[in-house]
Length: 42
Length: 565
Image 1 (cartoon, rainbow over the protein chains, first blue to last red):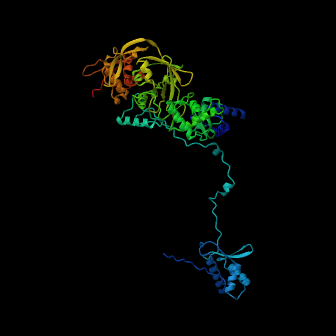
Image 2: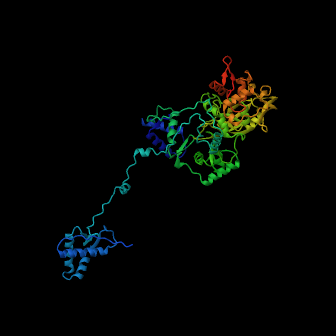
Image 3: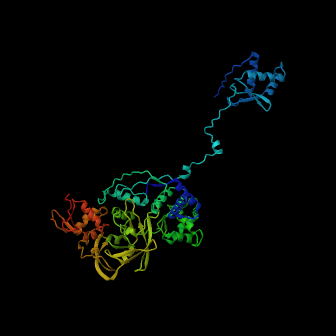
């Protein structure tokens, strides 16, 4: 896990999600958002 | 000091008369720009020059002079240029007598164009705006020569230095000094996250987002930093004062409601709770996070210390150092209950080890560099609730739980059997012992005045594990034995040797003494001086064959031969 890194596209998306949220998000929320985006882009 | 202005006269072209007119023209123009730089262009309009020449030379009219002057100027193009500005002709020269050269503008450093037409920001710049990476140094498992890690307080580091200064202790030999080669592997960029488990993905996200300056993080929660509400200096001061007033660690919810006056039903309650935790975590000089995932306790400087005052926290951590090599080897508890037999050391200082078994029911640090966590213990048998402090293991100190001093002293004796049960509410635990009818025995205690061990009659009402009870009948040799010196106590192998001499059976001769002891006696007797588990004793015996021996026929029977030197 130490050597894994998300692509800049993923990170940019997560930053956008956080920026658009007015509430704190848990890591689980972020994972859900990321997976949902992957699904929709397929 | 006087300086002479050296001027070189130019050579004029044309007839002698024209040369004289050109020289006059140059002198007139120079006179108008005496204080100008040598290369600065000096302008004089031809009509004004013509008027001057007409007034001083009668042979031509002003118009004729104008025409002639322009002709002379054009003939001396190295000295004059003729400019036309708003239908008026000007003769232009410099004070050094050279036709002015238009200044070359060096635009290599001019950002005017950049400001007017900004370049689009590259995708790389957009994506990564990271904090400077802090070197993640691998901490060797054990070495006396390595100083305290950064998560120790300055006070503790100074205490360590005092200890090291007192005596240079060789590495405890139960744990080999490890040489760690740090090999940095290149990061693998994951484009398709579908094959990653949630746990792995959570770790990757946390690792990367923690580096982002624009992201606020506390525990498992994330938020854009600029959207996190800020606490004023007054808010921070009031929070500190409230903690001092209540004289105990308080949860984030208590601080939110009591100090900041927020109701749990408020729309922004969750956001403000995150803001409070995040902002307080940034005020490390004033506040310290000592919470768990669901009981987020905060403390501040000046609150009473939880735990014994008989021994420094750093020294207890050093005593439990052997757990660093052990904790990963022992399987954690599968359920929420752990049984434990109290040792003399634990009874004396009101501590419990965070060993492999205990760590199964206690939380891990919730934030990076968390030093300790405050837990609440409830004793349904004595109807009391008290705080204990879980000190997380660091690079050279083992983890332990402190704050049981009074509970142990009032209810238990060394050798008592009790259970700790994790409550469903994270951060709250039940401690229970088996009550029995009163039992009177002479048990080992410390005579503080004489610094010696003594046996005193005690009445206790808790069930005990007999092989851990330090009674006079079992260990009469310990009566009036002086406490070991601190430099001996810090070294498990010396404590073991001393314990052999105290309680072991002399099976050698007076010239060549040899002591025999069984593990069941060594464990409680060694734990009088310092924490030492059965595994540690076995490890010392097996690693120092010159001094200690294992009986080849009977399990857990050991021998000790003092070195003759």
